[in-house]
Image 1: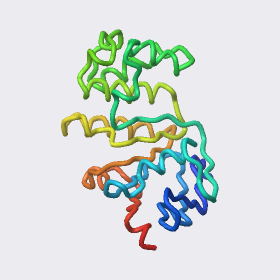
Image 2 (image 1 turned 180 degrees about the vertical axis):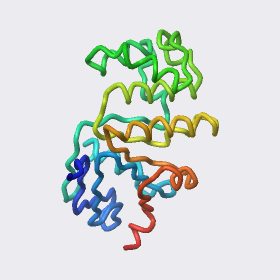
Image 3 (image 1 turned 60 degrees about the vertical axis):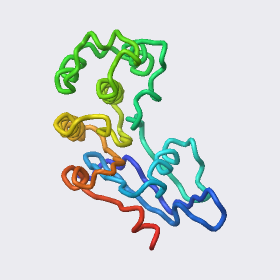
Length: 200
């Protein structure tokens, strides 16, 4: 049986400055059930790649084809509106009844249900990041873009969160950005080192 192709990047070229390419003839194919990590130092183009996939940046040339996606950002405070409750913001993007699913997600993310009725500033960074992950999973994406999802979490919860994301691979593909090479080696099917790509 052929695997479902979720993300297909071909001959991607992008630069902010002329003659200083961030991506040159970059290819990436990501299939359902795969977790691929983008690894590199600050400024190597990790977040730029996500912006290209989302369409907020346009490539100089090449093509990006992707299926329905959702995102988990590194800074959860920037991904929630400060004046609305968490549940209101989840309802805004999840256009269906998710009552039967949310309880198990809350347990696995170690979140109290009452936190969903609070506003972002009333939660800790770790709690809000887990709410961000909850929102992304409830959207049932085919492609999950995950930018340093565990940077605000302690190590034990971080690995529990990654285990939950890995379980979700039954229905999607994950593209992960992380500075944690040990985490990447533990969870990834493939690691793309952007410094290596830049040299080629």
